[in-house]
Length: 426
Ligand SMILES: [Cu+2]
Image (tube, rainbow, N blue to C red):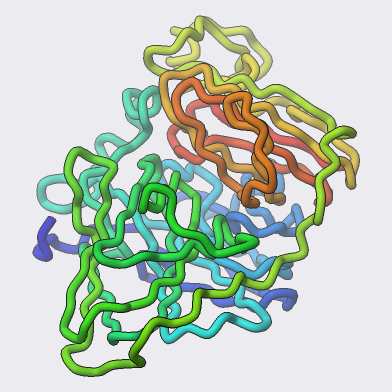
């Protein structure tokens, strides 16, 4: 990757990719007007916000599409502080690929003290040789039935290899988000030891070191880090993406040549203030449902229901459907789970496919309570969970937000290709 790539023609919020960083305050109403200047209907989904259902932005489930030339007012009060993001929830596989996404930061009432609060919004673009969005492959079934639309050009904050200017001795907060359609990103920080303080917007009980020295983000996931810039003035250090054969530098810290913010080590970072999530989940009394994930290339699926009809694999493919949850491709009339408000739900996710998937629940955060048969205790709160090939995970959440909530793969081609369902909290 060089710096010479021409700017690609994109679809953008307020003319920018990523869209503007929206800063909100925890517990204070936010009012946003979406005016659709696209050639297609769209909506905006506020990913990770435990939002009023009517504001969740899911075309066909929580609202009608916003036609070209029309507008929609999103008004909601974010209950949780943290790092969230927004993107269309109509033809997301195309609209996100074209550049429609941005960060939504909900500030803590008492933010932790850092010298810089920086964003790191990653994307994986598929570009043509002359640096334009590869349009011919949008909607390509081969992508849909395999890993999704993987790109050939990684950007951070909309550019290739941005420089983050820092001073020796500074403490920074770095908010990472994976806004790629389908690629799972693995970041490694040269010569620095980040502490993880939040995942998917939700604070960890205690800051901790990175597992295997890397941040792994599936599409849709976020991580907040605190990094102490302990190198000498004039130093440089790369941030590498290492999911491919060799590491690729995607961004770089550049230390000021002479300025020193402070010298000597700093005390370890404190945990972020907790958000108003449940203290405990009563798993004994939970309503439990299996979610069998099937389909895709090299899968065992021979057919599935789609729009009320049992279809063969061939018929499914011609309907653009290649994945299924519990034997159904695409949305069902009835929810996967109907649950009374205040009850705990457990979803047993069983990945019977030859591909990883990033399952995203709307309107709630959940805790993973089992992974491949192993019980987990006090796992971090998340809104998106990555399951590797043939993995199983059980996730639990308190169904405290009434409405109709999507549950789908956030590899956007998998979602569009059938891996989508919903739960209803009554
Ligand atoms: Cu998937």
